[in-house]
Length: 124
Image 1 (spheres, rainbow, N blue to C red):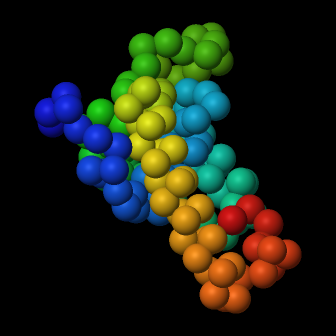
Image 2: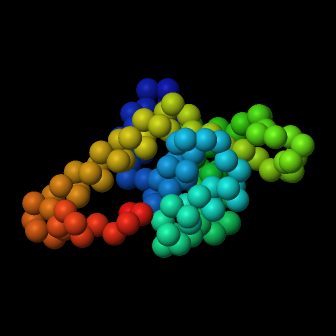
């Protein structure tokens, strides 16, 4: 993991990794919280199972996209076994680069009349 890595070096992201980064973009979450946020945001169309979730988290920690947080939202209401994760600055740049890559694909699909401006399903 050299410090000189560019976000594009990690592209394309797997759908699971992109969904995890999106779930962590606005707040820290524990694993189950990530799973719930992804399912809710996609209207149930995307469900991350525990194997996919925690395998992706392990890889993302190693790649420096996310980090484990020591902070607890409310220690009195929280289970100490839960691990909370947050997106890193590098992870935010990688997610942005992936969003730009996907936006380019959508632009090409529209230009080739494969996708109309009103045919994008909600939550996608």
